[in-house]
Image (cartoon, rainbow, N blue to C red):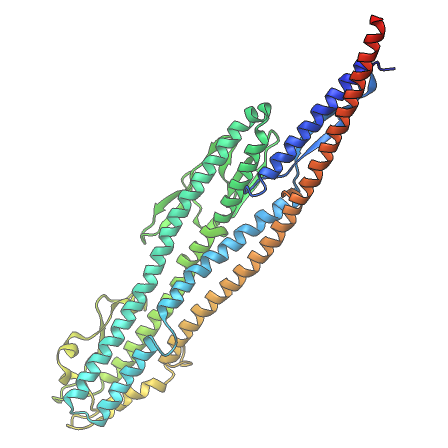
Length: 457
């Protein structure tokens, strides 16, 4: 049978345990709005009577569900990828302008100018209108190509900045790996683990990383095909090297890993820079080259105001490779730009003939693009449609993945997050237990005092 002194010991141990539990509850309440904080729970264990009886603190646990944590890490890079694509393409879409208000408007003005010239092939004013409209069309091609290349450079700049963020986060995760053993021994390990998990989530938003839990605590992080970013307390930098085209390639350990990064913000920006914008630019180049080819072919068969044979109407400031670079380099032939009388409006060497001008104006409705399946105006509309579709598709995918991420995060918070209602109930429970143990302690103390007074008599 335990004596009164054993009962005092048991009550004191219980008071300490309930007070500790109240402190843990207060810690939870204090961090209800702390990003990455994981709710703590106290595990109590009964102390057998031969050892004094009562209760003791067995453990303080971070409440986690590894399945939900893993699912969240899978969803975050998907949403970040689509966000990066949607944000970049929305800028491209805005730069291209609306159908009927951008390059296609310049194409219409160009064909209208030749139609007006056909009405009065000897008119100096009509010839000047052709010069102005053709210059505007060439400039529109040039500016659109420059805007697309500018968007590629912006994506490249964001890639370089994102790589810096990846390296900063990787270094911090490795630092925590190194600090965890000492922190776990002095009771601060769980705080560092919370911080590390938040850093890992931030890193997963930047790239599709793979996270492996270490047996002794902490995590290892790899990228792409197992390329290490963090191993134990060591971090490995993701480097950028400038390729022949002037854009950044990604490398680690001297190995190019650009093609291995397919998720997160980096993956989205790489897709925009390497696939999406080059595809739009290639379509624009084909449109510019076909415009020049079709107009030049007709113009070369005509005769100018002086009866001379017509030459090339459009030329290039820099010869394109195939059609690559055609849009950026397209220009009105310098001779025609300087002298409107050299515009070949006639189809025969007779003053007043308008055959060539009518033929060029008729190009508006001729299917000369994409294997004779689309008009030149259709070609531009297809580019705008492709960009708009890609942009809206990325935005829709972003919204879907963000919704899924929120749902998974909500499920995770139900397990790991702090609920003020639940913590309030726990606080009340531990407070009542503390008060009851205090009364028990007081009662035992009173009994001891009575017994001691009896011995004094």
